[in-house]
Length: 187
Image (tube, rainbow, N blue to C red; front, side, top):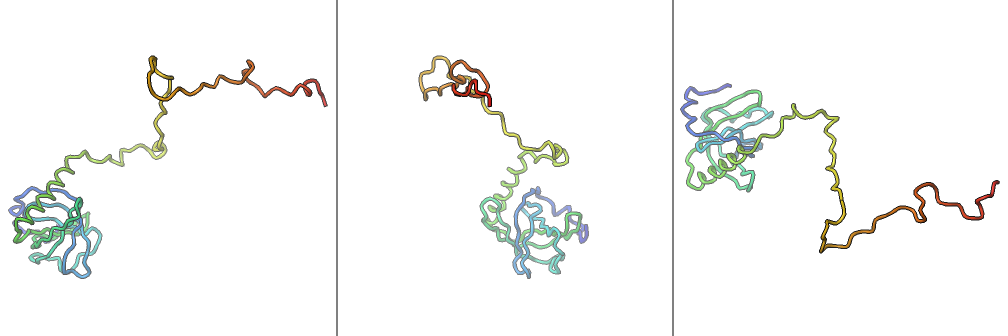
């Protein structure tokens, strides 16, 4: 991690919540679409992923950000001061402390935290490394229900379908009978 300030631990007074949401930074040219790394009532971590770190990402810089609610697509417009710049295996990112939030902005932040809290209560997705090998992943439909006929005492519903009892005249298998004129005919 680069650019860490010595008082990072003091800044982390609020619980952090993981939430996948889109972030846009106003005034940045071009306007990048970034990813929210985590969120608290006092700030956020924003990630660039594989994008190169822009020159405006520096300690102490003030940014105007729009955080998009992933459920309602409402926008939280908030000002933040960059208090940490980091580069790790996940790419570049920066942490901001929100500045001058009013009650309406705090309510939107709380809504985002509620969404993150509900998502974190869900069971994690299956681990692909533990999934079955590709040859056994074929989709197999469930077995069809077995119709054992109408239940005894049936009083409603459509009439039962006729049951096929096989070929007429007592034959049980084989080709159809030959016409009478060809029975003894050897050509």
